Amino acid sequence: MTENKNSINQKWYASWFDTPFYHILYKDRDYQEAQYFMDNLTGYLNLPEEAKILDLACGKGRHSIYLNSLGYEVTGADLSENSIAEASQFENEKLHFKVHDMRDICEEKYDAIFNLFTSFGYFENDEDNLTTIKAIHNSLNETGFACIDFMNVDYVIANLVPEEIKTVEDIDFHIKRYVKDNHIFKEIAFTHEGEKYHFTEKVQALRLADFEQMMEEAGVYLLDIFGNYKLQKFYKNDSERLIMIFK
Ligand SMILES: C[S@@+](CC[C@H](N)C(=O)[O-])C[C@H]1O[C@@H](n2cnc3c(N)ncnc32)[C@H](O)[C@@H]1O
Image (cartoon, rainbow, N blue to C red):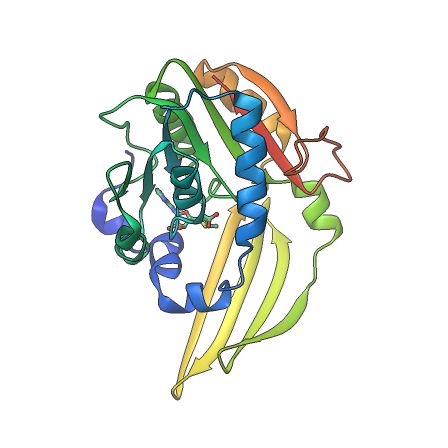
């Protein structure tokens, strides 16, 4: 890992994702869609019944919990202590959660590692992206597959809503979105109990060519690319997602 623990704690992705406000803003995050995607992905990968899956950057575990309900042995891992604490209430014999940085190699090996819903491209340093892909590769067993489900940058930019107000649980979240320095920014400002808050999500505008280059450098093999949760073909301008399967 390139940064020490103290500097990590100051990063936007270590603070914002760990606040209750992040979970309030995204409380309607689509569980059905997550399940539909997991049905399609596990079907496509043809995972054995006893497969071990790592849900890397699992948040509160919506994919992990569903994958476990399908019978798989699942570990959900995330940097956010609060998310892991919340997810942990669903733990059972074959479902575990842990605080973990995606740049670190896991002690165990997995049949499948999933990095879902744009949980990549947060680091300041390009080297950390590469470190993450290498860590994923090194945490797979010999027959294992990995999946990164990222936004399709060209689609997102073409459909960017520059400003909106979203009211959730009586909080008015003022949201601004823009593209700058090859990053997609989302500024979130709101007042809660008289206190003003301001957070910024900042995700690198990584396109397929960027991933292809990183994967080549990391020595992983890109097997397939899909453009949505139905696992249909990827089209640069029209697909909502950029879903990459590699080993
Ligand atoms: C957009 S959320 C997606 C969460 C989950 N995959 C889902 O679909 O609900 C991104 C997640 O990445 C986690 N994250 C950010 N940086 C991380 C890191 N370095 N290592 C592990 N997780 C990280 C955040 O805490 C957050 O839960």
